Image (cartoon, rainbow, N blue to C red; front, side, top):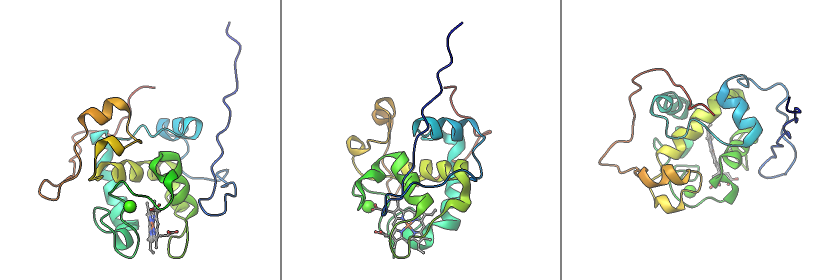
Length: 169
Ligand code: HEM
Ligand code: CA
């Protein structure tokens, strides 16, 4: 039989200090999407319609007070455009690290959400992106072909029609 090769553990680092983030006691690590993310840095919830609604609700509860309802920016910077103060936030791994460990000033850590819920929030943030899909490097090439940027006249909310299930890896 094939030898088993241990997957290299990814390390996650604080956006400002670079210190390793401790995920050893993290909540929400046992879903297929969380396991896949912790091994690869890829978010399987991206553009999965039935997985977006929950991320939207959590974003509204935990993030929109500072970043605006669709990430248009408020006391915190806009999260719906192609500019990030910290360029690594254009990757899902980087965005996760910023959410989990926080950044400067009012941007505190949001590790209380746990890994799985954070991934749903990240998918929602990616969904309300309003700029050129060509700059949306967090999408797969396939997703970039069909992605429709958010447009205020065409609300971006997505009704779930069934359970949130990720594509088989
Ligand atoms: C910065 C996400 C909650 C205030 C950021 C950045 C991200 C982010 C990705 C970096 C943006 C960039 O690189 O341009 C989130 C998410 C939240 C959340 C997903 C909810 C889970 C909050 C809350 C506040 C806040 C509740 C206010 C109390 C700020 C501020 C910055 C920031 C002031 C700028 C910090 C800096 O430049 O170092 N946030 N945020 N955020 N956020 Fe949040
Ligand atoms: Ca921005």
